[in-house]
Image 1 (cartoon, one colour):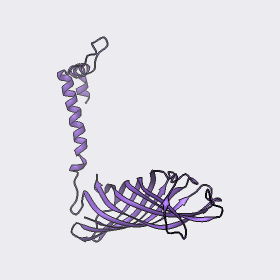
Image 2 (cartoon, helix red, strand yellow; image 1 turned 180 degrees about the vertical axis):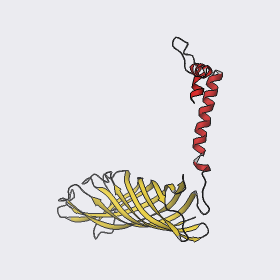
Image 3 (spheres, helix red, strand yellow; image 1 turned 60 degrees about the vertical axis):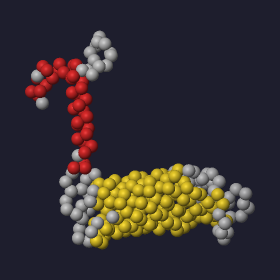
Image 4 (cartoon, one colour; image 1 turned 120 degrees about the vertical axis):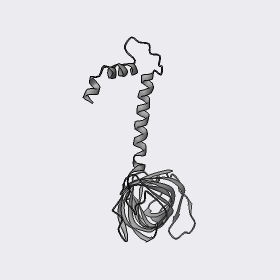
Length: 244
């Protein structure tokens, strides 16, 4: 590199790329500039294809797609615990899972899930004279944006840890009083939900490229769910799936 810098043609070509003081600011594609942009293009292209050409050992897969069903337990978190008393309820989610590898044991894990979360809270709600429990049913279309770290593939399978974010858009928001089977729309529920997700589990080899996935995930919501009491919705899910 030092010998290259000592060559006069290096500085002459570099000066020809950058407009000099007093020179016309009209941009033109000189041979030196064309060569410079060619170098940048080849360099960036090489970086982009490097992970795709990485060496994987026998039995490792760079990408996995699967279907999953996840029972969950959801609850609301209020800052005013004297006015609202939350209770946990059982819900579920299902959808498509995708693990995209960018190194041997490191994966970007995403997908598309329909997540139905139930929760409840006792409180004095506007227009009510007595304390009653309301049951909430909130449904989101969620996309996880997480990093999944997997151990080396063993004879029976391998373990993984997962951390990242989930982004959700509300599909439906309903509420009802405990003992009343009829749901009504929630007034003032928010459209978007963001959560911080952490989990762990295992992939069990069944046959060929087919594996079963089991795990547990905690998702901590950090955006407001609705205007009444301004609660945040979190959940704990138990993950069951098939990877192909």
